Structure formats: structure tokens, C-alpha cells
Image (cartoon, rainbow, N blue to C red; front, side, top):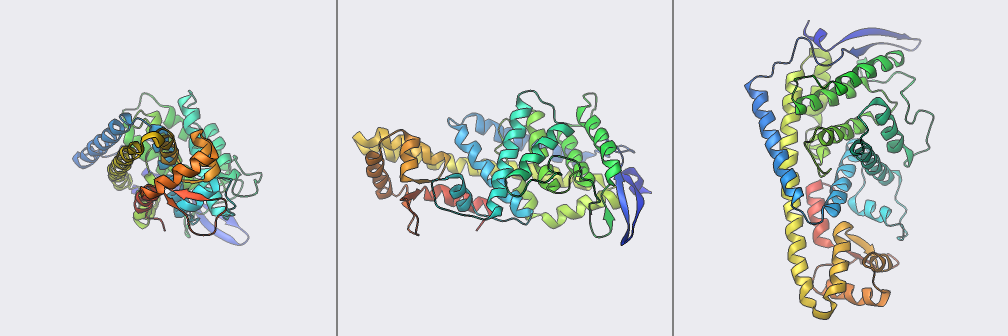
Length: 381
């Protein structure tokens, strides 16, 4: 049967439940993938789009602000897919602890996602290989701040986990073996499987193993970004993979299931490669929009004459974080509070910043056009 190419089913019998569990075979698939002209073309298009995005980010003079911006966007979208929606505004308020905001757990989940991604990238770039151990560490951070940390944080699950209403993920006693095979696939440097197709296989395999009690799908999305970086396909984490998955979520779920039930790797890989290309193209357009906004506004700030030096430092701060209260903005720009107060009001007069009018103390300012670009691209309310 075609499904035997992907894995095997076993019956799990419990007092109140009798279902099948799916145990995936080790990667790569056997029989081998049919990488025909269609997949080769999609792969080439995805590689070209990633190359264009990477070239664009390499030319940016202030990559750190773009990095933080896109990590926020990815975190919000990934958390929204997981049923934990928040908003860019609330995430910024949460980051800025000087504001008297008390957002719920959802915004902390997004902040955890950013921390977990940053940790994984830092570890990978410092020489750590992507392994089960690293994924456990990332999982611990992903769970850590948004809820009470339980004994299952950073540990493989000890109970059954549904893949859908019909089947379960591998039983707990099979997880260690599944992850050993998963690591072997990640570590194999002799494989002739192209890098992007290897990443596509890894994401789907991880989702079907579901080694943790929760957060598996979010961790799978982080894994994709980590592998894009480790394979040399993406220099900076300016990549909002969750935006494509959110827009095509039903198809995405159906294709992951089809791997289990039908052994259909090829259609999943086609979906994945198409998503990589579209995400890279969309991210590049958004990056250009932000870069053009920053350059245009910087030119206007320079027209302020004697005040332009301090105003430029404030403008630079708002590029990295588009919402600041007065005192924090002054500290970020390394200028006095009275000077910051005066110049922020000048930037409001120029139409670059807006003072938030809803009840917030202390006085708070927002880089409105930057927020608009981010919100329009995020499809967030």
C-alpha cells in the first residue's frame, strides 16, 4: 500500500479509548521521492526568492531593527494559528514594561515564541547542531513564560497525543526511537536530497511525531526557520513562515494528514516550496516598504536643523520599537527628558509620530506608518 511508504499503524487500547496510532518510518521516504520537473521548478523558484530576500537584507544598514520587527510578526502569526491571538500593539506594550498594560497570556505566548526562536538561532549560529536536545531546550523556552511550567516542559511527552480524531501520534514508548531516526536524518551530510526538500520533510515528520505534550506545531515552524539558517539559505530571521500557513491552514492540515494516510510526500513538498517562495517575496516587499519609509522620514527629520541630531537618534529608536513612552524614548536615544519631550512633539508635528490618545500614563508615542505596514502585512486586527 502507498501509505506503507510513510509509516505504520498500531492499535492503542485503553479503558476508554481504542484507536490507531501512526508511527512514521525513518526519513528519507522509501520508495524514493519523485522529484520531477514540477518539484524542481518550484525548488528553483523558492531558492531564487530566498536569494533575493537575503541580498536585500544584506544591504540594509540597520538589520537589527528589521530582525526584531519580523520576529514580532512571525511570533504573532504563529500564536494566532495556535488559537492564541494577540495584537502587535499589545506585544509592544508588553515588551515595554514601563507601560501599565496587563495583557493576558496570549501576548506572553508570542513573547515566548520570540525568545525561543532567538535562543535556537543563537545556539545554532554558535555551533550547536539542530538536535533533539536543542529542540527540548527551545520547547522549554516556548512554554516557559506563558503558563505554569510543568514537568513536561522541555521533555518528551508521557501520554498519547492525537494527530486528528481518527489516529494518535506515536505512543510515548516509540518517541525516543522516532527522534533518534529524526536526528540521523538531520545529521546526514551524505544525503543528496536538496536542502529545501530536506526541510520540508523535516517539518512534516516532526509534526507527525509530535514528541512533546504541546506546542509541537509552533516548534515545527521554528524548526523550519532554524534549518533555513543552518543550511545557509537565510542569513537573518526576517521570514514570516506562519503568514503562509495561516492563509492556507486547511490545505496545510490536509496535506500533513495525507502523508500519514496516503503516503503523499510530493504534494506536501510542492505546497511547502510554493509557501517558501511566496513568503520570501512578501517579506521582501514589506522590507522595502519599511526601508523606504525610514529613508523618507529620516530625510524629513534632517530638516529640523539644530534639533536634527537628537531627533535622528529618536527616529532610530522608533524604527526598532514603534511604540515608546516618553521616558523610555529619552533613555533609548540617550537624551534628556525635556529635550525628548520637545523633539517628540516636533516629530508629531511632522506627522512621523502620533501621540496615543487613549488613557495611557506616562505619555506614549507611536510610529504610526510603521505600525500600519506591519499590521497590513500581518493580517492582524
